[in-house]
Length: 125
Image (cartoon, rainbow, N blue to C red; front, side, top):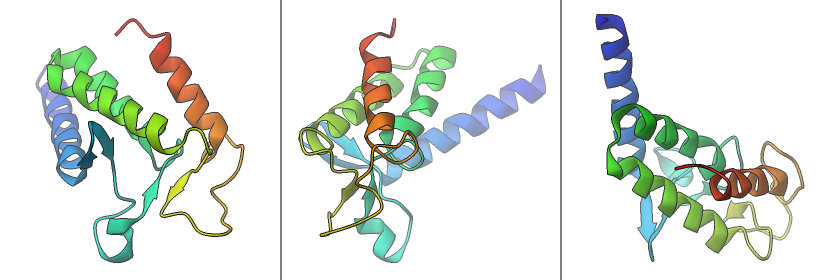
């Protein structure tokens, strides 16, 4: 129906907005924490603000549109988590001497990144 089409178009627009803010480096994608000021150079890598969370949008967009760009974004986001989080379990860039993001939690820590990588590894995508 028309409402579902509008919602899908809005979701695609959201995905395109996210892709437009992405920073690409060596086949990886990172998304700045925000759209202005210091947030443009800060990258959260957990479930709530990083690839483990926002990549779920890419998966659903691919499932509904079958557009290869969403799978490509998922793959590059996955490579970003692997390149940055592993092996030192860094959950925030740039890193500081201390910080709330070096933790084991599901939301903003290593458990969320690990669950994301496990989900991608065992998916049927």
